[in-house]
Length: 162
Image (cartoon, rainbow, N blue to C red):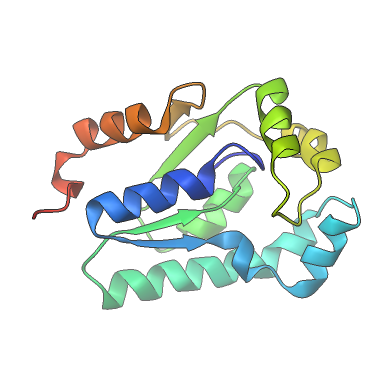
């Protein structure tokens, strides 16, 4: 979890690959109306996100009930209330918070061109962000390899057996 441009998708995909788990990008499940709103430079509000978060929670619970492998979901989950919706009925859900400075993340967003979220909305993401209390924090200044190493040192049972 974290603001746009912090590396959620890259990190979640790497975790899934290294663990033999499944990766999902929550952005892929936004309704078209949300994507158009963001692409127009208008931040989403709680009402825009509610149905999307409920759908993600349904997907998390369905995966848990039908699959033994871990699921890594890249999702902003900016507010505690959003995380509460995602966690409803899923006590084993853990949040990994990718934390970084506004300047670093803005620089990363300006360097990419393949996302519907414009850099102009980054400020609204930081304004909405409620830093999580019960999450594993990662500083995105660290290289992804170091972040992966730290995760698997903390959760050695998640390493894919060859």
